[in-house]
Length: 276
Image 1 (spheres, one colour):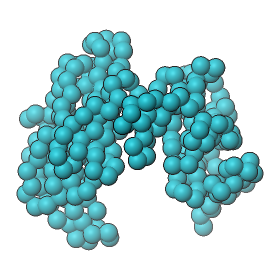
Image 2: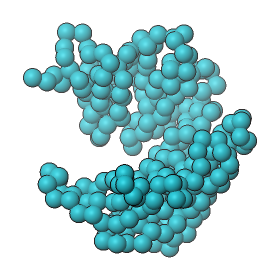
Image 3: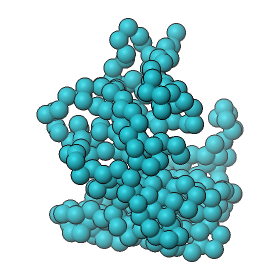
């Protein structure tokens, strides 16, 4: 296991490794000093390296952020992967897939935060080449081989990274909803939680729904999950629901699951995992 600590005396960020039960810890390497050049954000591990973001500004200030990587070994030296500049600049959704690190470079068009814009990019772990994958703004995205499943203001789309062809799978044109998107390699899940939260109390939590689509964009099923907080698309077998705010009636279950093999049949039933 790996973790990052901030030394409150020196304000230095350090990367540590430890065994699974936490009894043995090893101080690996220095990352950054808070306040000297910025603050460390969002550490991600992939193929023997830690990737992390450093900001020299806050909120909507005009500045830059740098994405670094450092090898997971004693006293390794960090190197810059990429830089983004502008108002409220940041790196979003950094993730590793095969030989690449994917990330969104984001900023606002002005200090008032009028428009938020992003572009999807990738970094080759061996050649260190950076290339722009998609120049238009997107939100959630998932990599599958040479394709990117992503959501934007118009809906859910699929991008072929070789041909650059974009295919629309699900259109939001007939809906006033905003969605979080998840993809597990078989199904696309759209969660309207963000739309309910944005309504600032004008909508009831009982309206919370998960729409499930196949890879071609056909609606397969809809789950009504109400005021239960954490939906997780899960693994190849199960969907997970964390009942943080409200347990299912008659149970004390913190976690509920659905067998994904039943999604296409329409016979979905939550299995509640109760503690002792």
